[in-house]
Every structure is written in C-alpha cells, then in structure tokens.
Amino acid sequence: MHRTALLAAVLLLAPAARADDLERARSLATEAQTAYDLGHYETALKSFEELYKIKPVAGVLFNVAQCHRKLGQLKEAANLYRSFLVHADPESREAAKAQELLAQVEETIRQQEAVAKAAPQGTAPLPTAPRPEPATWPQRPAPAPAPAAALPAPPPPAPPPPPSHKTAYVLGGTAVAALATGIAFGLSAKNAASTLTSGIHDNATVTDLTHTHEKNAHIADLFFAGAGVLTLATVIAW
Image (cartoon, rainbow, N blue to C red; front, side):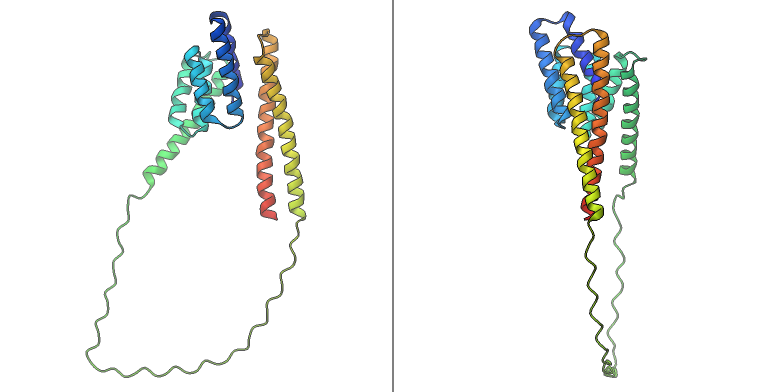
C-alpha cells in the first residue's frame, strides 16, 4: 500500500481538527494500516471510510481505492483513483502512483469485459446419427472367432529409483531464508510507520521515515512473494 497518502492525511488533521477528532483519526489510521498490512482489506476499508468522514482529504481516498483494488472491486477502485487525482497535486509522487495504478485497473477491466463478450452463449445440439434399419431377410451366422494365441507374459517392470530430495532441500532452505529476510524488513517498515504516527515531526523527519517505511515494506513484500514461490517449488520438487 502507498503509505504517504495515509500519513499526510493524518498530519493534515492536526491544525484544524478538535483534539478528540484528531485522536480518533489517528486511532482509525493506525487500525486501518495494521489491518491492511495483515491482508484484512475489508476491515481496513471500513476504517479508512470512517476516517474520511472525519476529515475528507485526498490522501484517504487513495487508501480507500487501494482497499477496493485488493478486494477485486476494480470499478470502485478506478472511480476513487480518479477522485483522488482531481484533488491531488499533479506533480506529486502520489499522483504519479495513482495514475499508474489507475491504468493497470482500467486495463484489467477491459480484459475482463473482452473475455466476458467472447464467452460462448450456448452450443447447438449435435445431430443424432440415424439408427440402422433391421434386416428383413435371414442372415448367415457370423463365423466363430479364432482362438487368440497365447502371448508370453511381459516381464515385471523394474522398480523406480528412489527419489532424490536434494533440490527440495535447497529450495526449502532458500524459502526459509527469504521469509526471515522479509520479516526483518517488514518489522523495520512497521517501526518507521509507528514512529511517524506517534507524534508530529518536522518535514525532513516525515520524509525520511516515510521513505524508509515505503522502501522496507516494498522489499519485505518481494521477499514474502519469493518465499511463497520457493515453498511451492519445494513441494513440487519433493
């Protein structure tokens, strides 16, 4: 998920909101981010939508769109990306990311619609072959078949060689290493996000923590994906 939009939205609440609204917004932002990181996208979506009711800023719209995209609700996600781009700074990194995701979502929608149009609507029944008319005259009985020649029994198949699990061990060990690395980067990203949301920081600190959070979260996602692929390859190789 693109964290900059969420964090900017929470910080923008500080100057104008009441203390209780600000505290509620920060709580909702933390709940939504945690649920999103855990893959609980429906829970994250509800928290982001409630946060948007307290302070309708563009950054929250981006996060709501991300939840819809993860849930496969592509048309809703596309509409929210467009709404975000109307209010966002067109030169910002968030706007460029939203443009990229919107293009991906629109392309997926076009592909799905093309597949739906190409699906067959039904098939005509195959013609039934006419049944032969019964013979109207006596027929000669068919000659008895000749006895089949006895064939020698085939030799028993050779037992298969015992499987070698060397490749599976190598893949499994690599998967464990990738998972451990992903967990380490994920914890680092979460610590950066917690530090950023724990209080109000100057712009340089916000930028540094945001960059660290995004970079480590992206690296963690890559290692988690690699661990999943390696685990599947280990099962197949075994």
